[in-house]
Length: 117
Image (cartoon, rainbow, N blue to C red):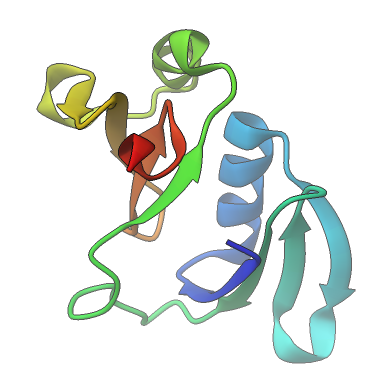
């Protein structure tokens, strides 16, 4: 994945969520659009603030491959991020956990890209 443009309910809350959980950095401020581009060397999220947004009917979920998969459950717990399905779910050759961001987007965190397919 290269990048995703997303509408979020609260720009600063979303930036903090992705920063704290994934270590994403602000790459570009776009105050004229109530927007910031965040990410790392592999993926970018372009976040646009709209307090009235709703994620229903959009993306079912998007996924990130996590290098430190065995540590992500504890990190979610320490940050107060709810993990669905009581923990990891097996898909093909990989385990995944499912969470939501502050705007309600569902995110899959996977051990092996694409389930190893």
